[in-house]
Length: 297
Image (tube, rainbow, N blue to C red; front, side):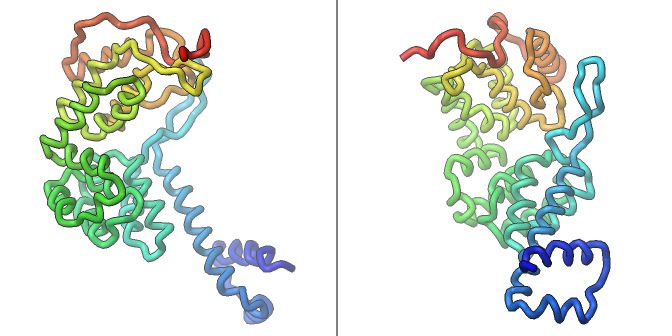
């Protein structure tokens, strides 16, 4: 029997709480690669379990039979126990576990769910400043200590100077905030604006939110993969999702929207919750559609 064929059933027995007999250990231990194989199996099992834990931490959206939308998990993790688990694992001795936990906290856990974990997150980032997602996670703490830590540890900024500016802006650096706003307003093409929309949303200041909201009536689009037209407004809404991660209106729709009711509902939310108004009409409806002709040369 191959070593890998033995590892899986042994791990399954251990997960069930069963212990291995002396005979099992002797039989398995005849292969000198057995310890290495079991260590790898243990790591793989932890990573697999962590992936499941993360998914279980997502709110479950109910089925909408009228619109033929099945029950499905939300794109964020909010369960307090799962968030606490992830925070504890960013100081884990296993680099792969740290990477998974930190990148998940940075990408899909709303800042509001991190408030009670600020000190633990800052301590972990001091210890592991180059782990995946550390810089983005630092900004999401919204802690004044975060800016001091960023200035004291240049290795945090080494992964991306653009991300460092974005994090500084979120943590209250007005010069950094202005530079991102200027970059968007001076962008030469729609592609540049699309790339900057998420950064504006991450900063989530009053000024960047209002800039995003003003662009919800943008008529701009690009040819996506040379096959379809892709509205800038899709990326603007993704930016608003970054700013308001718990608001379902900004989550990616299950079906591609087919009429203006989609944008209308978002505009009504922005009026009611942020007092936004527009000085230009809403453009003709476009989400993403097959291109009517080849893109211009």
